[in-house]
Image 1 (cartoon, rainbow, N blue to C red):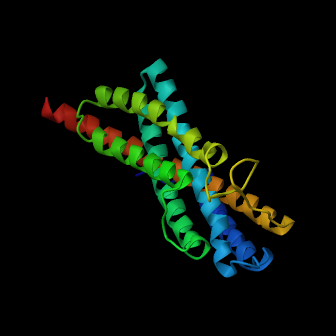
Image 2 (cartoon, rainbow, N blue to C red):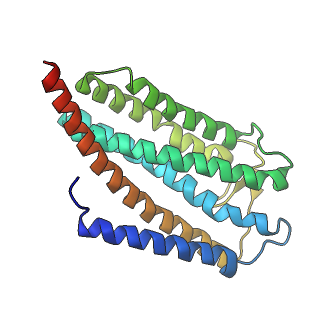
Length: 229
């Protein structure tokens, strides 16, 4: 495998430094919440990972549209990369949310609108990965993946607005609506937005790595197809 581009190497270092800075801000700069205490600090990375998870699913839908217009298989590989990375980040967001929910709601999980739609969103894209495995022809697989991710992308805005249109115990972090509103001090808001920025950079870094791996996997698949003919 060729060496990493210089820009990607710099992104690796930048991602590590920013993640360390975000952790320092969470534990030293952001004040401790008076009611929940230290466990509230999970919230900063919970929001950031949820944002990145949704971002990747949206990217996959946009890339799917580009593939359907161009029929270039490289866009299928890019869309797959976005979905795989976002699945991991969104699972982490759900896990961190459960840690926060235990002291806040007295339970690890409850089927309120936000958690229900988040679980459905995660399963929709897990099914996408599983169903792709059953298609050996690259073009059929790419067409299926494109249509699926476009339709699956519709569940992203539903998950985001669920706490604004339904009665729920999940707090609204940004904007208005819903039954609960989380009021944060300026230092808390700064830490939250910085964490979102940091995980966005991490997403770009991992996305680039995964695209490069996908390119090599595609080359190997083409070689296998040639040998089997």
